[in-house]
Length: 140
Image 1 (cartoon, one colour):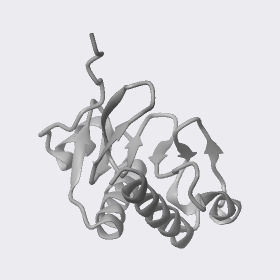
Image 2: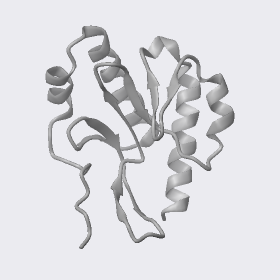
Image 3: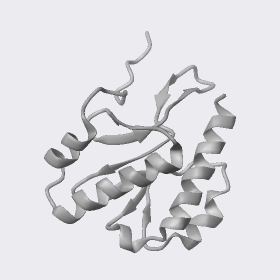
């Protein structure tokens, strides 16, 4: 029996989600700015995935273990502690770009930033584009 995927695309309104979920005005502003940028960079409209991820585009993955599912190509979540950026694809050329990104912390599957001013948005754009291209090629 296969497990049901927890993080799936929903029909929730993204702007309403940001307004209700994000409590700090500065983080709301950053969220709307990230939403604009990622929409432009991906060419995809924002969608809520799961409870709190704003994702752009999607791809279908299948691992050797047989586990499969769908995930956004890139995305972010305006969490209380930090903004989680789901933009990093291992195996792509992003490692060299991370050195130039700015102030961040790396998680297993995401990059954590406190505010947009801490990073170079032109480098983030390159990371997003590299990740999108890598994922589309790998999972086409």
